[in-house]
Length: 308
Image (tube, rainbow, N blue to C red; front, side):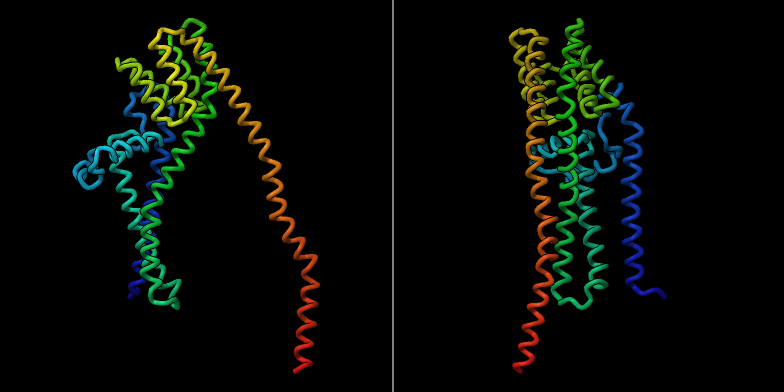
């Protein structure tokens, strides 16, 4: 007969393995469908969640925030990470609950094995800490996804403006130019290509242009893109030439990109100096002072033993 701890360890290993397999399979499916999403898909199918909404709909009362403000904030946060399916909020809450439960179970299994000689209060503290880590881990991962998506959009936006200006000056309308740029950006910047595709679909469906531009800026959450959307809305409202507004803003974006590059370059000497001091000075001091300290310690030891 196997001991009870062996069954618990086997169960924990199977749980972690199943979670890892699900994670890998979902990302493989997303990678295979990314190109189709960019080219010609409706806005709702651009999400990166492949789980059907009916799976957790019956538990919607327990898996979604009760307040409308909290629900809207959660939807916006998930949309900024690229998750726009109706089930996104419910899947996120289920993932958070499963993560907290998994970390707690793993801590309960491993704590008696690793800290058998530890004081008795260590077990409850380890379980509570593991629960908090598991509960916060999905939010931290989501924040990383949002930050990476914003950085990708911000880095590719100046080139997108240049391409948009070229297309509009060639005689194309804004919708045609945005559709062409979405196709061209697909292999290079999937985030902007996906968002431009959604923008085109919403304009084609007859949605108000001001609302479409506002939603586009909210989904990306980048300050420069929000300012550009404000310029587009004002140009559309007052009848100003869009090409002229884009030309001025594109020049400003190129200047900002150069300034950011210079700022990063100016920070490098300070970072290198700190790294050099951290990894060079302490070892050098140890090498230079270490033998002298050993001799001093030995001398005091001999004096102490002679005096005794």
